[in-house]
Image (cartoon, rainbow, N blue to C red):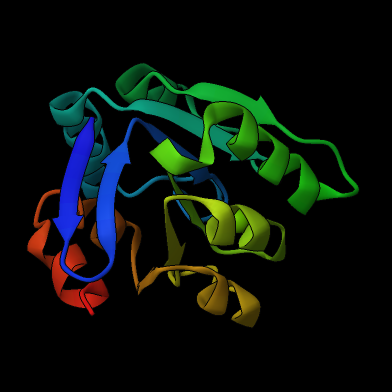
Length: 158
Ligand SMILES: [Mg+2]
């Protein structure tokens, strides 16, 4: 469990990482090596359960599956934002951190304990930035938040 007390904001108690794949974890289907390493480190350190949720624009590579050992959730075309939200609610929104960049990520980002918008090589839909708690500009920075946790505190404290 990843726990963090944020002054004036509240306490985070995260058990699950729910990650959009294309545009968030991966660019053109490939995951940055450093990001993949950081992700596996964070997952191992806090015993987080990783979930990759994808509309399967590009398939999830064997390397990612072997290293992170995520549960893969493939959504169907149509009502994608609702499908992602439904998965979040089943996992428990209060104990799940989400990351995404697309229009279908907005609901899960706004309803999760910690929503992180990733504005990397694929870009991000503008509304995703408003739906998130934190916006980062790379997949590496996404996982660095869980390593350098004062970044989360510094951004969210009120
Ligand atoms: Mg995406």
